[in-house]
Image 1: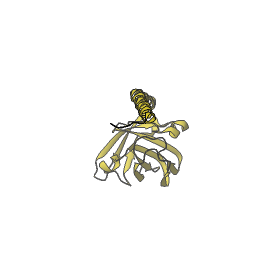
Image 2: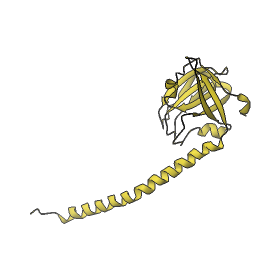
Image 3: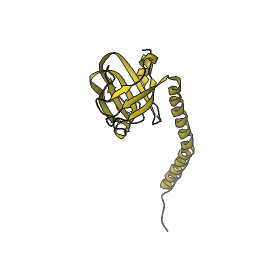
Image 4: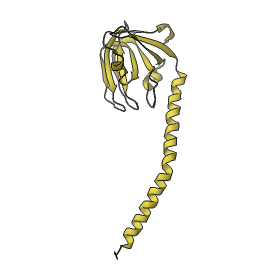
Length: 175
């Protein structure tokens, strides 16, 4: 028969008790996280959308409905804290006058393709699969008037490339 140290037995019991408490709390933490994510996603419902069409190098039109950032605070927030972006959605940022633009992924939970667009609505740079939560700056390298963010990987899947023309109605954009 083994001789157990009473202290070790007590530590094991307390550890099991602690694990049991964590297991009971885990579903509540998950539900709270989902609730917070859903409330952040609801922020997108408040934004105006505009149809965006990009003619890729094969001559096909790729279409998105882009949320418009119409204020400085919306541009600053962008897609931060958004847990799910539908495949046919994106976010369009307007910078006037055109300038060298820098974007980052701070507090952004999903991978994004960041598409920089000049004043003639021509793609000047695509940054594929930007890393979620990164604070590393992603630069336009040329003056951009627009930035379109879409789900990571969609640029490559849809054959988007530098020089493609991006079409959308600028009359509905008030910034």
